[in-house]
Image (tube, rainbow, N blue to C red; front, side):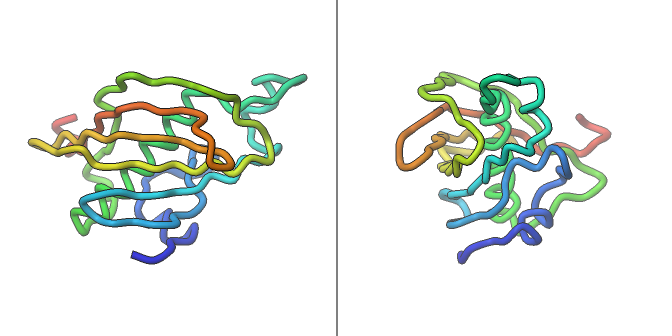
Length: 150
């Protein structure tokens, strides 16, 4: 699939400002992998407190960007879009490693590969890069459930 701009991204994510961590999708192969981008701006609200003298993107938000990219992959794979009757959320994070700080001005590239899915639980291998160098990696589990079952 071709590039997805922010409008297409927002159609495939329930998140909204200030919690949208994906600005664009560069590649998406439903059922296989996705490559998404986050343009890290000095204007991000979390930089005011993390840290005022040395702004660094929090690791948990890099993990959130991975989950959001994975979410887009799931929705594209299933041919669905988010709705008000269901929720997509983390079920687990394994082997998270942070190799290098992500700072304002960086272009964060998130690559997520589907490892497997079983009974509504999706397992992914994720890597985040800046300028081709890995800054974070993790294996994540995500789930989509109806709100009355969540």
